Structure formats: structure tokens, C-alpha cells
Length: 369
Image 1 (cartoon, one colour):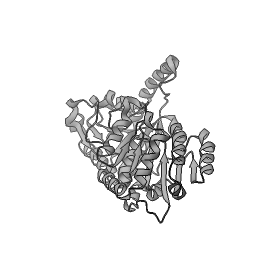
Image 2 (cartoon, rainbow, N blue to C red; image 1 turned 45 degrees about the vertical axis):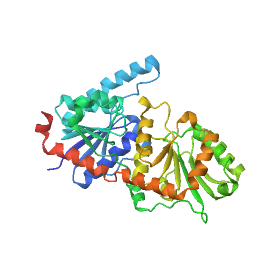
Image 3 (cartoon, rainbow, N blue to C red; image 1 turned 135 degrees about the vertical axis):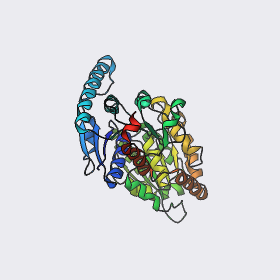
Image 4 (cartoon, helix red, strand yellow; image 1 turned 30 degrees about the vertical axis):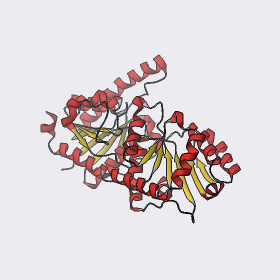
């Protein structure tokens, strides 16, 4: 019997990419998955082969009173559409990945008595998952401890980790190479899906303060917002530093495999990818992230000695330059951090999540009761 699983995700890659990773794991086990999402996911390109996509009529809840009213109407319309879709498709399990696009589908699943798995990517339970947690049969987490998760729900929790893209997981097999005097030093800067203006300002300025001999060996790959690409490129050229600056890198796995050190935000996907790949990083949490969840994510690595946390208000050239110089002059310390990161990684997260999902599919009536 083919198990049917509905995946409710969308809005951002942080929610969508784990859903796609789970879809691949389910397909490998002969299960049929469908993605229930919102219109914005069309920007992420084609879905994985074999994954059918259904887009609900929704709009983000933002933009003042009018935007919230529009979003509320969209939420109602999306819930009605999700109810019709699930009643027609009759999935064995619904998996919600957080974010407002997951809400209508999970609410519809609850009304239809369908078992529900919620997956939380961050170290803080997101708003949508907080709303839905009491309705879930199983809550899958990426971290051993998740802030704002009701302790009364502890019996429903299983720690699976956060699924990452297969190409990122493959980096784990590439041995980390710390800096050495006889070869270039690769520095990878990832600003999240939207880039980070503070990175564009602080990092080239910090590089300018490094010893000339170290600057000469640097090879920088920096993600930047479209409006910052030209200025950042020019700054590195003026310093004589070899740099590739782009809004988006489609070869992140290759760059990650080669890097000596990463500077990045600490969104859930980034943290999971760094741990899975086993690469050391300076993490700069986005200061306006909901519930300050990026700081919790970063602490997970920093407390284990796998990364260094630098708060955004402290992320200046004057602060970053000595930190960079010290780290790049300590290959043994970087190698130790890389090993600690790898120890935290969950390369089998998609498989562990698939186990939890298919366990419910095997006993739907018992679990839904």
C-alpha cells in the first residue's frame, strides 16, 4: 500500500528545503508526497521530480492594517481550499513545516482527523507551530531543547534534526583543510537568502585591517544584496584581494567544501548545513529575527565550541578584524571547531523525519484518536 503524505510548507527556503528533503526520503521508500504551499514558492523553481505541488490562495499577513486584513481573508480562503484538497487526496499524514502557509493545511488536517507531524527547524518554536502544537500528533525538532515549546507536550516530541540538501550532506565526506602558509585561505560569507547589508559594510573593511601577508592569501566568496554587489566588489579590488561577490551562489556545496572559515547569519538551514558539513563559522544572528531565534540557533554551535557568536551590534570592522586574524592563525583551533560542528550534524535528519512520518501512516486511526 502506497502511503500518501501532504507536506505543508512555503514562504521561505528555510521551510521549503527541509520539506523537499523529506519528500526525497519518502519517495525512496515508495511513499507519495505532495507539497501544499503558497504562490511565493514559484520563485524557488521546479519542485523535485515526483512531488506534486498545490498552491493555496494566500497572502502574507503584513503591511499594516490593510495587509493584515488581506492576510486574514487569505488565511480563511486557504483553509477552505486546503480542506477541499485534503478531503479529495486523503493523505495518511500531514507534515507542517511552520510559517503561515502551513497553518491552513494543518487546521484542515485536524478537522478531518488526519495525523499531524509538525517540524520545527529552529531552536525556538515559531509562531505558526506554537499555534498548531496542541493539535499535533508528533512534534519533530531540530534541537534537543526548543524554547517556547510547552513542556506539557514533551511526550509528543522526537528530535530528528533539520534535513539539508543532498549536495550539502555530501560535503561531510570532504575532509576539512585548515589554513596553511603554503596555500590560499578561502573565506565564505553567506548572508541568508536576502543577503546582509551589515556584512557588505563590515567585512571588506575588516579585511582591510588584516596583515598584508594574510590579505594576499585570502580568497573571498561573499553573498551580498543586489544593491551592494558593485560596492563590495570594488572594495576588494581596491585591496587587491581575490573575491567573488554575488547575490546568490548556485555552487555553495563546492565553496563550503573548500572553505577554511564561514561568516554567516544563523538561520535554521545555515546552522544545520554548517553542522552537517562540519565547517567552522563566525555566526552573526539577525537582530530582528522573530523571538531572537537566530541567537538560540547560533548558541547551539557556539556553546559546543563549533562556532563563534558575534552579536550584530558588535559586528564592526574593528571587532571582526582581530577575530579573523586570530582564527586564521590558529589552524588547530579551526580544525577542532570543524570536528565539533560535524559531531553536532545530523546527515540522516531526513531519514529520521521520514521514520516519524511513516510510523504515523502505519497506524493512522490509533494516532489520530
